[in-house]
Image (spheres, chains in turn green, red, orange):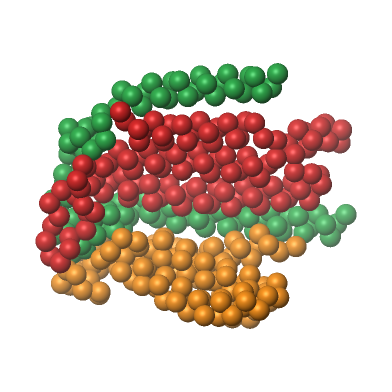
Length: 97
Length: 116
Length: 139
């Protein structure tokens, strides 16, 4: 019963997602909305001259969008803090009981 | 045929199926990882230019048809978040195993109902 | 675990793994890679050392306090570099306007803020994954 329900949900999800995937523009076509965005043109035109980095991805990650990378570093730090909290609370429970 | 986008969608549905079908907690974490990988694949594929080169200016000369660097930069952040969430989920599963002695999700729900 | 083949192969491979990871971190602005990928490669070297020679051997060469300090210091390094931009009259995390030397493009010590941020992120990610490995395996 559970297997039938799960298969139904999966078929529904697969149908919806594949229908959307078939409507997307073909891979690599130059007129796609993801490629013709003005932001991409801005970054590609100015990244090498303003940051002196040949690697455009590094220039975007560490210079134009360095604030997002700060958030990402904070996520790593928070994950370690959460795991250490879990371990200490388990040790306290074990020492208490 | 857009085989690439359809493959990313099918990978996502596979991950969802793994998460729903198995009752072992570690396998559910695997399913979550597969779903995240599918989302990253879809995102990065959208920035491909046919016959494109990597967006790196090999000595001093900008590439002729570079692929889009913006999705790659955004997915870099997403990857690290995925690693952090997986690490925390594994720590939680360890704590659950120590508290209940089993790794099966319905069994844990049953024992939790007995204790409370 | 006590396996002679594993110990011999690990002893041969770990210097090259660390060197390669350091190369990927430092050349983040010249070739694909950057701080995150290089940090993970260096951490993979640490994890291989712990698996081949025991956790106490890793704790002897990379003590727990050092890895916690490096991990917290990574964020402080990042925010400190951003505040340099604020004090120099630009925005938070500014590159050329804050006075970071850009240098000739294509050399190793070029790129200003990008190079320094990659270094900090690489060290931080390596220390983070080593800490995670230590705490997830402990009992």
